[in-house]
Image (cartoon, rainbow, N blue to C red; front, side, top):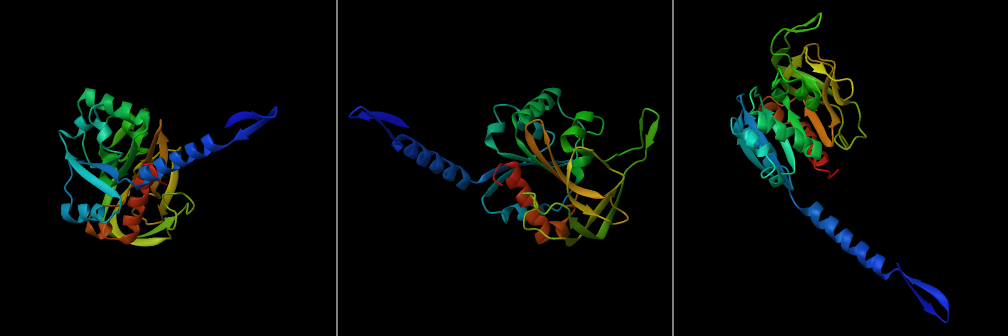
Length: 253
C-alpha cells in the first residue's frame, strides 16, 4: 500500500498490493500447471514392468523417471535431487552407501515428498531410521528386540481384499469410497503409533492398517501396502489413491 497527501489529507492506494497479488497468483498458477516430476526407485524385487509403468502413464500432469539399484541412491545427492519433486519407492534393497544414506536423510529433512509402495517396507531391515521414515516395518526374519521376539512377517498372493477408507476427508483419500481389490496381503508387519491411517481391512491374512501418512521431519510421506501386480495396478481405486498420494506429497492437494 502507498500513501500520499491531497490538501493535507492522507490518502492510500492499493495499486502496488493488487499488482503484486496478481503476479503472485499468476506464479502459483504456472507452478500448479507444471507436471509433477516423479523419480521411481526400483530394484531387489521383480514386478510386472509394463503394467506398473502404464499406471503412471495414465496420470495426468505427472512425468516420471526410473532409477534402479545399485546406482539409484546416487540420485539423493544434492546435485541430483532438484531434478524431481516426489520420490516413489518400489524397491526392496538392503545396502546403501553411507554417503548416499546421509544425503537421503538430508533430502527428507528439507521436505522432499515420498510415496512408498508395497514391498519397499521390507527394505533396510537392519536400519531403524528407515522404519521411522516409512512409518512401519516388514520383518524379513524373526527378530529379537530386548526381551521380545518378533515373528517373521508373512504374505499371501491372490487375495480378495475389502478395503475401508478410514479418513475420507484427507486429501489423499478425498472422493474415494470403500473398494475391493485382488492383491497380495502382508501380515505381522509393524505400523508406527504416530502415523495417520488412511486405508484399513479386516482380511484375516492382512494387517489392519494398509495405508497411512505422516511427516518425517519436513517430508510428507505416504505408505501403501497394496500394489503387487497388474490386478492392483489396473484397479481404478488403486490408481486414484497412488495418484492423489503423489499430488499430496508434491504439495498439490
